[in-house]
Image (cartoon, rainbow, N blue to C red; front, side, top):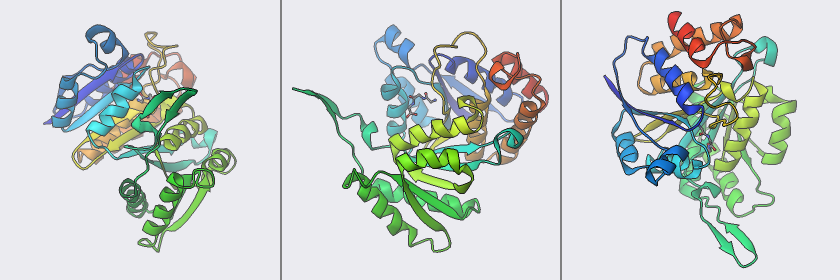
Length: 324
Ligand code: GGG
């Protein structure tokens, strides 16, 4: 039995998490869910966006399934990643409809604990200032993870993304650390691009990428761009992994424009649950669910409006569950 902390969060988070539990509940695995609150509504109701109980239960669970953060993202999802010390955020950009989007398949390995996302901001006399923290230790850890990931998944190249020509000290440290770590992996090609150039190459040459390793902010931005290459934000899952904890969430946010309408695409959250199954050592079931999700998307019948259908979030999830 696995103890899973479930944090739907805000907006469409509730809908996509409910849909995902419908799919998980069809598997012959026993899950003990603890439903926890966090987010904008939680802040309005109880004064804090991330209650201590939510943090404690998340830390003690076998894995965390998270939905979406809204305006309180910094106090909720960014803080949770720090509290759980999930130092890597894996964001796979993979086309599930190769005829439509080509054979795009690369992994973004995003550093998850530092950079501008430490939230060290202050107001000054003439405006405001934010501190960007890049440490050698965290850079070594994330770059090593990226190379190991490349070896484990038979990839041949790791690309570091930074802006070291402008941010010479912080991004320069990240880039230099990357090339130091690369020396330990002589069979893997190591190259680097500036983040602005990468934003273009992802559109002009997406097949050139295999594994991207980058800092927190660039990883956040490039993964949304990646989603745009393969059908939209409803398609990309993610896994936050640390030495003791795993937290799984779609890349998308709370999408207030469509929240409550029951039309959000549940694929990103269902695939995040597949990454959770991998983390729990249940990879056979992860592959089974992925296979059905791909079939259902390509069938294009019982899918949400963004995928060309008219099914609701829950109808699509029930259809996926029925095929398992
Ligand atoms: N499920 C991802 C989510 O809630 N995203 C909203 C957001 O702003 N996230 C910031 C981040 O991923 O760092």
